[in-house]
Length: 161
Image (cartoon, rainbow, N blue to C red; front, top):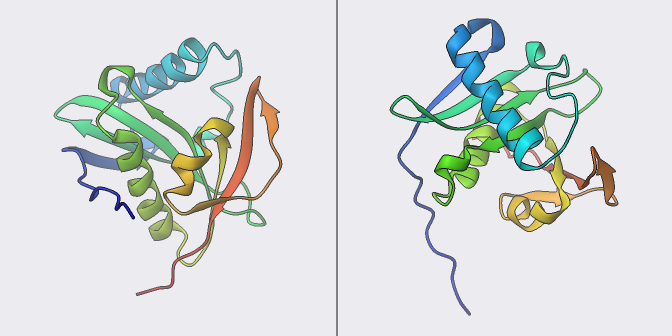
């Protein structure tokens, strides 16, 4: 039996804030990263500015002043689970396990904002194993969203400590 390597997070600082608390420069940097990853790199024409950012907490990882990665955390309505979405790692900073670090931080922040509740994601289908390693379980059949195969996944709530 092999054991997985111990998780050692990369060096970064975190920032979590609402959209209205961003400077224009910081907002531009985050939105540019998301467009660079989702629209340009993935060649996916879709409404990146979907009107939901105003209702979200925005998590960002930095190394100094360099934006490494970002995600948004939100609950679309009271009758649905909290969600993590728009998970993006800067193409300039890939290969540093930042996706894992970002998702671990996102789960922690969701648990703070929505204690005792499960967390949902709409995952690109090819990333199921990655999200599964973070405790997310597939809850839907594969479907196509904006031209990319996706599956819904849920991470059950952790017991309060």
